[in-house]
Amino acid sequence: MKVVIPLAGYGTRLRPHTFSKPKPLINVAGKPVLAHLLDKLSDLDVSEYIFVVGYLGDQIAEYIHHNYTGLPVQFVEQKEMLGQSHAIYLAREYIDTDEAVFVVFGDHIFETDFELVRNPISEAVIYVKEVDDPRRYGVVMLDDQQNVINFVEKAAEPPTNLAIIGLYYINNGRKLVAALRRQIDEGKMTKEEYYIADALQYMVNDGMVFKTETVPNWLDCGTPNAVLAANRFLLGEGGMDNSGEIATNGLIIIPPVRIDPTATIRNAVIGPNVTISAQCDIESSIIRDSIVGEAAKIQNALLDNSLVGQDASVIGRYNSFNVGDSSSVRFA
Image (cartoon, helix red, strand yellow):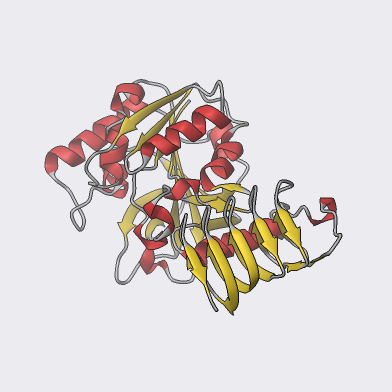
């Protein structure tokens, strides 16, 4: 099986952090979103990973080569942001075969056991999650046999609340490429983008059987609030808390937290729901519900519901901050 991971988006909703870092490398609960994804996929039998990169793609390639040595990888560049299907179609050189393809969008964190990928019971599997407001998502409609009959992309009045979460298993890459090619040749776009739902609809109409698998947890990481919510979940229910491993001299730690052992922390209250990254320097501060990036400096500050970027500094003040990399906020 080959895995295609589209990662080329600009991450505009996560600015200022994505001015200097691609969205998949945003730190959540101690490691980048992309690392959570790759670690989740590591138990699958994958012959090759194809990463579709664009904005700041060199950082993604460097991270993978440094942290996932030996992973069989290819990189494809998406120069124009023309949507999901366009991104996947750019990988056709590697997936236009009879081998299975697993498409995994790289800006979400999810929980599933991949049983229907390891032991397929149909030609294709779409992973879904029941949501309260499906208008923000593509959804699927099912027949009496629980097979997918329609894909509906971001409708004003969605017919179901089964949101498509960005995981698509197809047992034959050649058939997927043919559907993507047809969609692009016919110019079938929504809001000037090619959505994969349209290509998959061609496949359903041609008789391919799609089953669904509902995931218990799905964490969007596309906005600051969503990143902080994902951080809270992973530190708590996700088991990423390491508060029991931290020396507490001069510290008050309120679990759950994730504190890198290279961070220096003095006279501080940390937690709950806080990630402190490598090489941070924190003094005389209270931090809760926040993520502090690598080598950031926090002094005499009270942070709540904040994202502090790499090499940033916040000195003096109680507030909620969204501070990008290499930035400085100082209050008299």
